[in-house]
Amino acid sequence: MEGVAWDDYFQRYENQALTFGYFSDPTHPHLLPSIVGLIIHPEGTKGTVVFAKVRIENSGASSIAQNFKLAFRLKGVDHNSILVEMPEELSVSTNPPLRFHRSDALYEKVMNTPIAPGAGVDGWLIFLFDSAQLDVADFDKGQFVFWLWDVNRDASETELAVKDFGIKPPEYVPGSALPIDTSRLVPTAAPSKKKPGGYL
Image 1 (cartoon, rainbow, N blue to C red):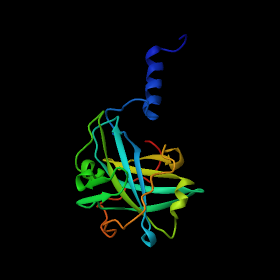
Image 2: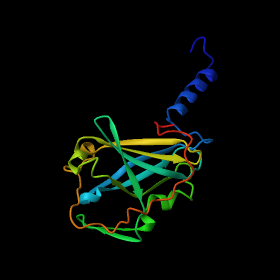
Image 3: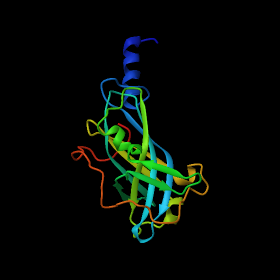
């Protein structure tokens, strides 16, 4: 490469690659969430309960994950949900039926136990959307946006359009009310320094 020292060229490439997350930065967490499972459960006037199975990969320094948020983006508007506590035991009449335990909750696995460099963790989260804002039929028309924060309170996000999830229609689970106490919210850490944004 005439006129450019190889070391300088490589350093510029390395800095760009780290900025865009092409490979790991061993000095800073880089948590990459993805939604790998989705169940939508209408709860009548209470709203719609969404079970999200989320996987977090860490390509940077060891870090916990905290302050999980799920919104549904419809026509440019983000409809927020609340994160509710996983019961000790919960059965959902999917086909085949699913049974959840508190230990399945993602926050139980990653809020106090750091995710090691190169490791990945998955778990379930339960969110409640207000029926006054969203009808269950709306979920085919937009996309979910999920955020989490690392130990430095930096945000990472991922998006998922229901129509692209590979389940047609999405796995809606109608029927009896779930034994979820929507007044029991998951504890969060101190407010984040940054608003939700793209991959950091």
